[in-house]
Length: 184
Image (cartoon, rainbow, N blue to C red; front, side):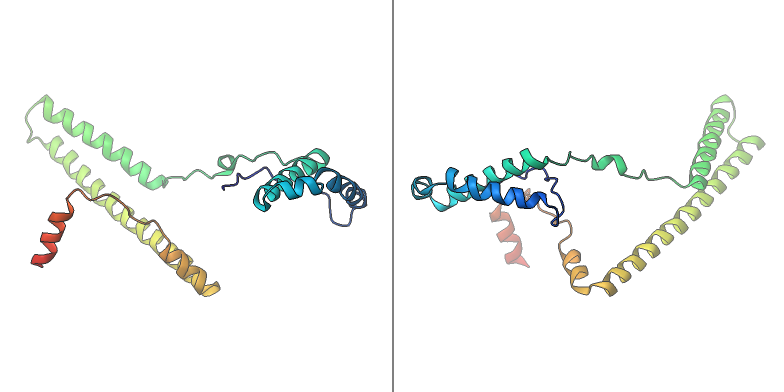
C-alpha cells in the first residue's frame, strides 16, 4: 500500500477556542460515521486509510490547505565572473582578427605576429584567472565541509557516503567478467 502526499493543511494555533468546537464535532461525527458495523467489516489497514482520508477532508473543509509553492521561483541564478567573460570576449575577437588576417594574405606579417602574441597572452591570462577562481572555489568548499563536519560529524559522514551513486549496466557479459577476474 502506497500513500500519496497531500497538501499541507492550514490549522489554527493550538490555544484557539475553535478547537473546542472541533473536538465536540468530531466526538459526535466519528461514532456516527465509523460505527461498529463499519469497524467490524473492514480490515485495520483499510479502516485506518479510510479514517485518515475522512479526517483530512474534514480539516480541509474547516481550515483549508496551503497553496503549493513554486520552489524554482526563489532559485538564485549563478553569475559568471566578469573578468573571465571579458577575457573570453577579447580572446574571441583576437582569434577572429587573426583568422581574417591569415585568410586575407600571407601568414607571416608583422600584424599577424602581433595578434598571435596578443591572443596567446590572453589565453595564458584566462588560464591563470580560471585556475585562481577554481582554487578559491575549492577553498570555499573545503571550509564549508570542515564547518559541516564540526557542527555534526555523523550527519556529515552520512551525507558523504550517500552521495550520487553510479549505477549502470555493464556492456560486457558475465562470462567475460568471470574470465577477466580469473586471469587477475
